[in-house]
Every structure is written in structure tokens, then in C-alpha cells.
Image (cartoon, rainbow, N blue to C red; front, side):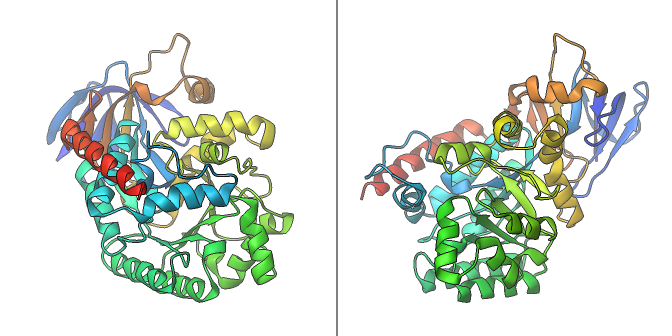
Length: 423
């Protein structure tokens, strides 16, 4: 079974080479693509999609997402106006995640998957939390993503903030999930994870041959707590416990770092994920990739599901605070591909594609692609999306699910969520 994208302009995601070709797209998790002359249509094609005048390239990956925040849009003000980052967590996100139930989690996952698909992301690395609905939560999310056609690498946010019993449930949920699906071992942040839980998480990481996914120094509070409680800084603590030994480990945010911490990360195997817009929204600081090495991904931190938007934010904000330029902005945008492929995670093969209806008023080619990437390309130009060789968005319409029915469900669940948050 194969799909043919006819008369497309294919942009190679690494070399940025432009070729006018027919693209034969294999179906399946490990499917490939074959570039053919535009006058050649091979046998065995099940569907032909006319891509005349359209640009086709590899689809996108969200390097750090939070499904659980999907129903927050438009909700009422918190009971107390937060005065710092800890209170943002306490009065907004920890209030929200504590009332999530199975239906709300499913609605959040479906809403996220739809948003990702329409914005051209066919793979999501997510970091989930629902302290009063832990058991089975990752499978709910995975099933919802599978239904829409979004590949995934999930984890549960293990933490001691709700007591050791909840931490144990988070560890159990992770262990059970990793028995039958690919995933990571999730931890909230150093300041909510004690030595006992951290030790168990690293042991699970090692036994399951996976990585840790954790927020690191998102706010200065993470560092002051670690220095007060453990006599060292966050990255130093994580390094001593072996968190950074795995090339599958993802360190989220990494804003408030010392030179030594940057050196530790640079010399480790771990990847860093940048979340510019979330940092701006929470007023916690600005990302700077200096001396962190070249393993920097981009994420959204649950703010939205649009990776093209995240790349632009990283570039523009970084003009004053980072060592980012056109080349490194695109490299960070594509680094999630490197992370997934280097670690042999499935679901990000070459048969995951976006078709862009980009009618530029200026010449668009290999030599000026990066200028168009920063100043021209956006998600509204995504016409078709192909995941694992299958069309999941066609002419901007979801093909795998009934979007209007799902949005009716998500709106109902959002009202339930907001009402429960008032209690």
C-alpha cells in the first residue's frame, strides 16, 4: 500500500535541496519515501495526491508538550493572583491537574492531537500530570493520539509533591506503560523530587533502557531549593544520580544554569528542550544556548501545538538573550528528529510529511530557505499532513476523526474541569 504525491517540490529536511519529483510514500511505522521522475507513476499506488505547485518536506516534532493543559484556554482567574513561579504552579497548574479525570484526560489528548496534526506535527513528546487519576492515564493519552494519527513518546510526571504514595503510583504507572509502549521516565523537577524517588526513577530508566524527562532550572527557585536541601545545584544533583548518562534523557527549560552546569550538560549525552513562549508567559527568564552543546530541541510546554511558531519565538526573543541565528534556529527545530532517530524511537520515519501551499511573493529556493523559514512559513499554509504514510489531514480537514464531534466533547469536559477547579 503506497501513496503518491504527484508533481511535488520536495525540500530535503537536512540539505534543504529542492527537487521537482513524484514522491512514493510507503505505509507503516517504518515506511520510507522514494523520489521519482515527475512523469513516472509506479505500480501499486493506492492513492494519488496532486501536489502541483506545493512544497513537501518532513513533518514536525513537538519536543516538550503538556497534554493536561489543553482545556485551560479561556478558564477563569485563579483563586489568588500568583506573585511568583511557585504560586503559578500552586494556584494554576497544580490546581488544574489535581481535578483531571479520565474523560478530561481523553479530551485533553484528543484536542492536543488534533491541534498538532493541523499544525504539521506528527510526533509529540509529552510530559503528563494528573495526581488523582494516575493509573492508566498514559494509555488514555496514547490511545487518543493513535486515534488521530499522532506518534508519541509519553511519560508521567513523577513527584513527591502530593506524598510518597502518589510518587509510588507514578512510578508504577510508568513501569506498566513501558512494558508495552515506548516512553520515558518523567519527573516534575528537582524541588519536588526527593532522593528516594529520584533513585527509583533512575533505576527504572536504566532497567527499561530509556531516559528521564524532567524540568530543570525553569525558575531560580529550583536552584535555591536544591542548594538549600542538597548542597549542590540542580544539574550537579541530577548528574550525580546518573540522569544525564542516557542519550534519551530530556532536560526541559534549563534557564538558570551556572557555567559548571552548562559544562556538565555539554559533556553529557542528554538533550535540552527550549520553551520560549512558556518562559515569557511565566516571567521566569530567557533561554541561552551558550555552552550547552548542539543537542537543543524546541518545545511548546503546552502553550500551543505549533512548532513553526515556537521556532520563530526562539529566534526573535533570542536576538537579545541567546546565540541563535537562522542556521541554529532551524537546527533546533529539527533536533527532535535527531533525538528520535539516534535513540531508535519509532514513528518518525521519512514517510511523515507536510504539504505546504506556500505562494510566496518572492523566490523560494535552497539558498534562501532559512529566510522564508523565519519570516514566511507558518502553519496556515499546511494543506495536507501525512503520518506513517497515511493522510491524516487533507485540504486542512482531519481525515481520521470527526473534529466537530470531538470539539463538542472537549468543550463539555472543559466546563467540567473549570467547575471542579472552583471547589
